[in-house]
Amino acid sequence: MPPELDCHLRDAALETFEALAFMFPMPEELAGPPAAGEETVSAVIRFHGPLEGAVHLRVSQAMLPPLAGNMLGLDAPDVDASQQGDALAELLNVICGNVLPRAFGAEAVFNVRHAEMLPDAALPPELQECPCAASVKLVLDEGAVAISLYVLTDVSSPQAVPAGRAQ
Image 1 (cartoon, helix red, strand yellow):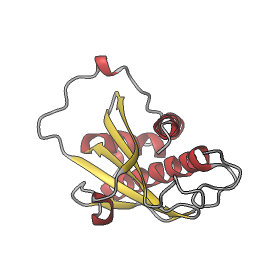
Image 2 (cartoon, one colour):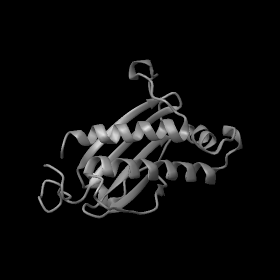
Image 3 (cartoon, one colour):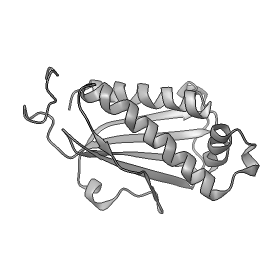
């Protein structure tokens, strides 16, 4: 995988968290240690087109109320579980929509499915054996975020690279 995929994923994620959720990164050295046994939630969004793959997002459970509250313009205690799930799914949709043209070219056309919440924060079976093409971890005031990009099609193949993209 091209090494710049991590940069594209990081830039898309930071831009989306900042613009959509008003959440900003902090230096990792300022972040406290992760809470022991901290519960996480995750979602996955699949895409296909010139390449087939998925983006997986995992956040701490405690991040959901402020995330949804910021996105909906509500106080965090006022958002219900459904709104929290919808906000996380929309955030993932936007991250995916921002990273694909950056990583694979603006001319590539992708069909992006609806994001799915994952009940136990585990990867779907088809991604468990797939190598991760790019991953980033963000530290925000509200908690830690892990985002991974999986490409199920071999992008090193000339047929898989969208026209106009250098390898």
